[in-house]
Length: 282
Image 1 (cartoon, helix red, strand yellow):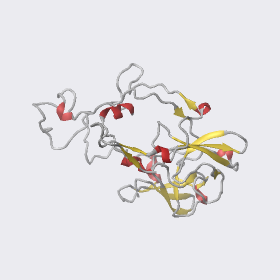
Image 2 (cartoon, one colour; image 1 turned 180 degrees about the vertical axis):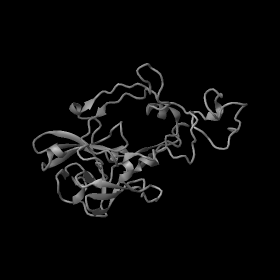
Image 3 (tube, helix red, strand yellow; image 1 turned 120 degrees about the vertical axis):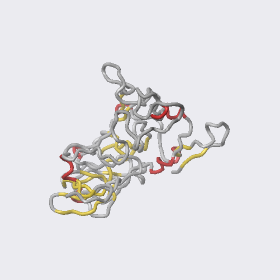
Image 4 (cartoon, helix red, strand yellow; image 1 turned 30 degrees about the horizontal axis):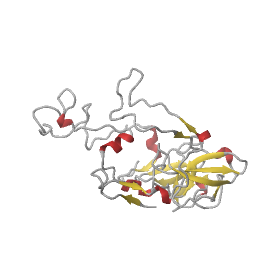
């Protein structure tokens, strides 16, 4: 797998790059029983007012139903049938078929191939793709698709190329180093998958032309200093003037640089052992 470049036949092609999908993916058609159509709202609420900026309709897509639990199939081996592209996420997904005949989508890891056998169990073989209790994973191993709250399903380390590292197994909790550098305590009854998320070259892709961003649901973004004062704190005066203040602000007047937005009394602070900047939490 790698990055594919194009001949500069047009200005839009000159610097544009894509992931070389043909070297990784095995099919271009999804498994229909596991796809649904999601309604798009372009960042608007029930009164059709924009509540999330810079969103747009984008290309027609179908959502793939991913299994982030797998515990109801505990102990049943599954065979990897396909490795597919998912328009709703940066990582690749794979269709697995359990021994009882049921098929499900799961996140693929970097080494996954068609024909591999994966399993979800409390304790399984230490092979990439196997999912097990985080208490049974030795220190130093890479993990992804991590469950932060017991029986709530995987909610962390799911983006392309990311992985966490088991730091230590102490008492009731496991210390996991997240991709951001944060070290977090996770209950030993939670599940995690061994390996690294697929498509690690995703961050090397060059979008280059504007309409490609439009396909990805994104509308253009304009600097605040180019707006009117009624639209942004940086707006006003003439042409591309300085913002006229010591520090930049968000469109709603909050400081934009060096200002902590996390609540000091956030209940999840007790699970953070070390922040992403290396500060120890007391």
